[in-house]
Length: 478
Figure 1 (cartoon, one colour):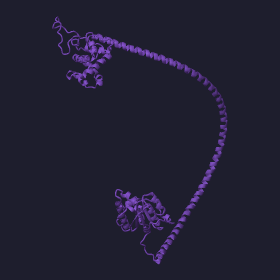
Figure 2: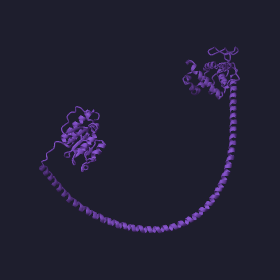
Figure 3: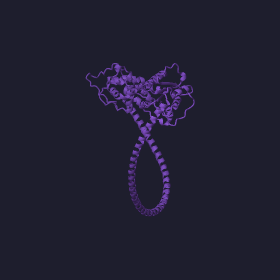
């Protein structure tokens, strides 16, 4: 097939021949007997190139295209010359083929470089001969570009060789496929014989199983008839039992109605009893109020008769002074003081109780409220805030810190605030529990700590445990 569609490019006057002028030389003069008005010979049509030959021509041209000077590269191919080598022949094939067909001067420039690269094979093709061992496609491509004498015959011979080679490959492929089909047929025949043997064995086994199934079917039919007979008897018995169940349900409904009637009577009696109990409780409440009022007046008279004076030392002062190792037993009525609440608003309610004692786990509160400060600043801020609470409420306030041996030069505590440090071998948690145990039964003791172990311990001794956040918010509000 030609490189492009055949068209008149007047190649006959410009095709190179053996011994002809080189690129850039003056072509020979026309014969002497040719007149000035002699008509030019008609150009011969382009030969039909085999596809491998056409591809080889494009590849050779694409290989030498970047080596040509820029002014010798046709304008349509200048962009193609910049492509990568692997893309030049593939993407610029149409443009290269068209330019080779339409531009004889460009073809001569390409031919000069291709022949130089081809070496001895190029020289042989220019001479019009081709080595017997040479690739016919390469020979045809060089002949098309160089166009020596007899180049069309070289292309035709190359096409015949390519077609013969293709036909040989097709015949070899057909022979190989026939051999493969014969092998598969032989294999299928052997497999079929094996499958036939298996099917005969399977048929014998199926016939044997069929006999067994027929015998089982006869036994199942006999069993089915017996089962149907039993089912008829069971249906009759079920109908009888359903009648009995219906009578039992009717009896149960009647009994349920009677029970509901008795329940309504009992509820009415209970309502009357509740009303009577409410009246009786009102009477008991009045008696209890009178009794409490009498006891209160008796306590005032007893305090006056015994001349009891207000004390200036509290139980916590004795714990702070003595640091006794003995543990106090739980008072009988201590459990009645326990409260299980972490409500921050509860702190104000508890501090409003008469003679309340506020015990604070110092570092537990400071690290949650203002842990970004140093320990000394944390202690100062907490103690000054507790001084304000003591001044506002008039309650007794005790704050406990760990590590007395590491504290030096402490400022004096505000009025109403007691500052304690646990001694060596004792933690602040243990000191807080001892302070709670030292208080008398009935006195409200509020312990502020987010330590679960401390809260559980003081709750067992009747104190009111509150979370550290409640005190932090109370101090922020002061």
